[in-house]
Amino acid sequence: MQDRMRDVRKELNMNELRIGVGVHSGVVIAGSVGSHRLKDYTVIGDTVNVASRLEDESRHHDSGIVVSERVVDGLTHLYDFKEIGAVELKNRRKSVPALELIGHKNVASDATATRKQQNQQLTPTSTQQTEADVLKLGSER
Image (cartoon, rainbow, N blue to C red):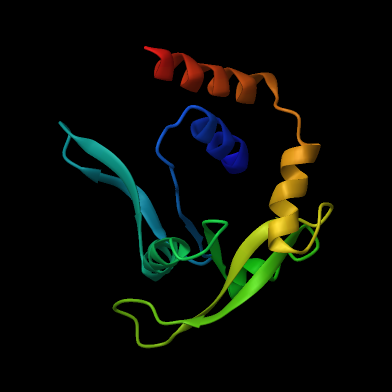
C-alpha cells in the first residue's frame, strides 16, 4: 500500500509522504485517564517507550517498519526481515536488537525486488483504488 501511494503521489507531482512504524511486544499499563469532563485511553510502560524509539529509528530504513527481535520470533514464517543489529535507543541503557520488515515471505527476500514484485503482483482493492482516486481528485483542485 505504501508503495502504491508513493507511485500515485509521484505521478501527481506531490511531495513524498513517509511514515515510520516501530513495533515491540511486552507488558503495558492500559486504561482511561482524566476527569469526568475529559477522558482519554492510553498505554504507558517500557514496551511503549521502546516501540516509540523504534519508530524514530524507522526513518533511517527503506521500509519504514522496524521491529524488535522479540516481535520477529513469532513472525519469521510469514515475513522476511533484514537485521539492523543492536540499536541504541534514547533514554535506555541497553541496546535493543532490531530488524527491518521487508515483506511477505511469498514474494521475495531481497528488499528491492520485494517492493517491485509487490507492486506488480498487487491489484488495488476497491478501497485502495478509491484512496488513489481521492488523491488524484484532491490534486486537481
